[in-house]
Image (spheres, rainbow, N blue to C red):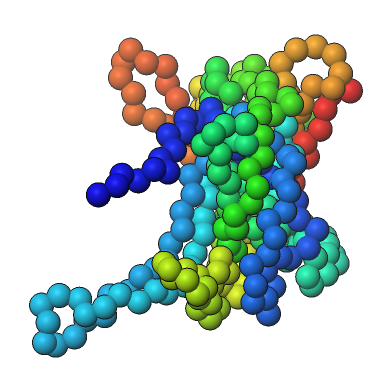
Length: 328
């Protein structure tokens, strides 16, 4: 019996984490052939190796006369990619923030879905290695994004994207981002009414959820051969659509929150700003503006006698923008 000869033993540092903002929809509802994987030129990061999931939603067939399942049949094919990165150049992350402009950007068939930008996300092992392979998630939308910056740590982001399909693409070179230095705690500001709350700030967690929903399921599209296979777009949804955008914001504090943070009335604009450490121009920076904020909950944390007291506020918030840039 021969042994499998195609084993690849990849390491995380060999990985590809690339992206591209799409200019058109690659899997419209009437499409019946696999799209060509786009070339992804943007490099996200510094990033961990993305997690990916292809769920065939197999269903067991049960019936009288047998003490085990009678068969297994496939359901809708669902694709998910999750990733974690330190925030340096935040351009990639802006795809999670929906445009609420009137009229909305784009028209049917272009690179926008209800104010969200369609993305292509490539993962695998770089072309310079013998273990090279690559998949590209196409027509992907951001389902959720979580920003976090804690005392004396880097600003990090955790995200989940829902591609319409995974398409095999030509492996790209594995490379780090051009600007790998992340935004750090020491450069972060939290501004409310032009007052920087940094002296009492212990951490920020900001969560954005686009509440995506997969709609319908396309036909099973087999490919003849041995073993039997299916097209990449077989059984995928007809569409993925965002529902209401929801925000959650938490601030961890070293002091009892000031009165400006203790009202259920609209507290106005909160601005989270951070920049790459250093001096001079052309350093990465990011500005997140949360326009409407209401106190939802405040709590004091239970601590032992040998620890500094900490507090936490949770805001009900809406209307957010994210602007990456560089220092002047």
